[in-house]
Figure 1 (cartoon, rainbow, N blue to C red):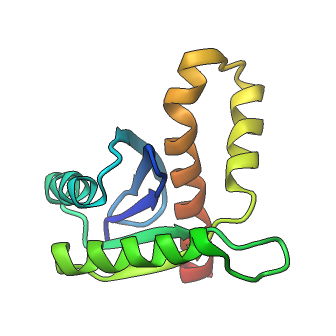
Figure 2 (cartoon, helix red, strand yellow; figure 1 turned 30 degrees about the horizontal axis):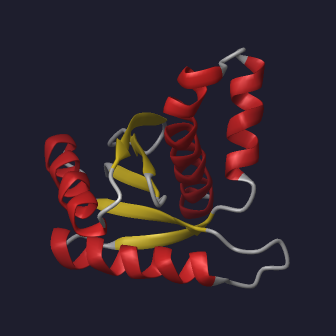
Length: 137
């Protein structure tokens, strides 16, 4: 099943997707959009284009496992995405994905504007990889 993941942000939102066999998660894009309703529309268009059957939205938990205001914003966004797309939406703990994304970009010597342009898509890819590990054992 093609699954699309979302690393939701206030200004930039990273998108990744996996292949139908759920083996390879890859970055798709970063969407620059501050309006949640417009963002949902853009993500739904990408999902139709890629024939996605499910979404995974990163859930930013605190290191102690509790949820703060940002987690609530992500849950609200996931609800909007589910309502608009008609597709199932799962939430995936995204603790440390941005840290790992920066480590990956350090290893590839990606710096400056190029780094800022891709870090959210790399984070979305890591969220999807974690989801697939849990889902497929």
